[in-house]
View (cartoon, rainbow, N blue to C red):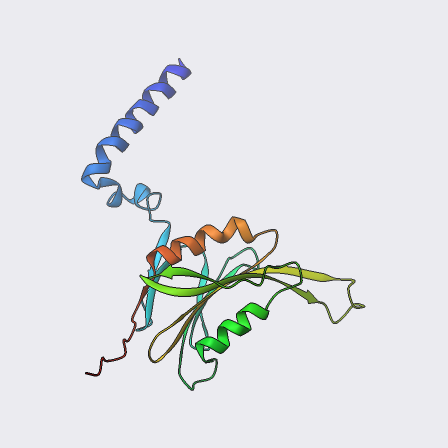
Length: 195
């Protein structure tokens, strides 16, 4: 008898869910509007860039030239920033590529490749960092992190997108970065063509 009641209740819920997906009733009914919330929210507070970030990530925290979002339970963070030419944090794009190539440990490849972001070519590198605690002897306590860095120049400055996470959490949270990159929109200034 209990089994039949559960089966009937499950059928009713399934039929309502399938019927409601087209009409959008689940967005209006209070118990369901919290269950069917989108997993990502848009960030549109900066005039130079906008993107979607996972809803439960904490932020935005203001950083030099941009914003940072952090995973609530760990050390993973994503930073998106824009640095105007001559402002703090800005480097010439060629010099910045050189700096990107030098980052990381000896186990890293130190290859800066080209990827497409917001329909534009961007420099991309992944590297490892080792942070030693000053409270212990050198090498006793080490935090190992992976960093993925993107640099996209435009006529007035450079866009930087940086994803940092401990080695054990890097792959798990990388999907948040991929969603951010897929939804990324940049306000890029072109240099005027002189004829």
